[in-house]
Length: 344
Image 1 (spheres, one colour):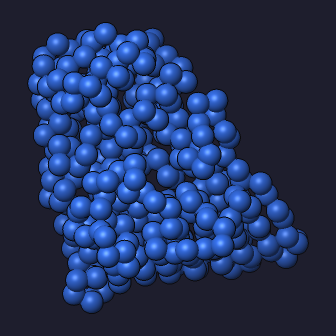
Image 2 (cartoon, rainbow, N blue to C red):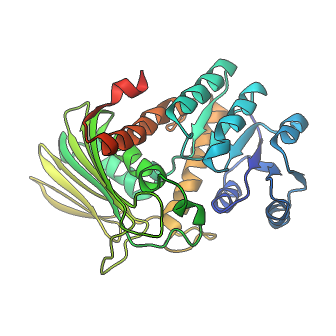
């Protein structure tokens, strides 16, 4: 296809990582920016030398001249922007969380499908080097068939200083962080049939929940626990690491702090360094996430050029988003939720 030209909508907190990563993706160039805040738009445009700048998405789409759009705005604008992309038949990447409601997410997938253009959700956590390494070890059969797992993200990192709006919503940790951890659980152990969830608010200065524990029943027969917290004060701060424990029919796997991976079976115990690269533009401790941003954007470019569906397509991410909705429903009612009823 030659060079792919992209437009970025949203020049806020996380979009800088996406712009820096796009510079490293072969045969891709961001040619236009859009943001409702003139100062953010000016700052991003000057930093990356992008002259085409728009305060409104309708003006951006009307001008055209790009092959895809990267939507890096907050969730309330996602449906309108994705449907605008569909109406112009422009492939789109959409930041997570996918939508405000599962109904909106289904409508967005349908709009892009009917337009015949791809939609990918920027669900980058499954693209982290340690997560990809765990997946590779499983595919090698090193621990046999997994029957139990735990996916844990526990921290006291102050995420509110950089993203103060996170403290204002009635939903917090499942929608913002748990969505990543639930997607990792799906990626590693397969789709989910039922779930049960409990939540708690420890920090009195926020509106939403900052602790959640979710029990998942997977289609393949495995059971897993997803536990996430921004209220856990540990001796060594693990942010932003996801820790994983897996037990299988012939062995076990443990991904522990410091990206240390231990694989044990009848042949003995292997120790693997699953550390992410520190990219030239990245900074610790964010480098794990920043590397995965580059990985998912490279995946998008490869799939768009080849006409393949992406790993985190809109259709695939509906299954992760359904787990978020199911977790909130279970926490509210105390009931075990069948996931298929949410996807129907």
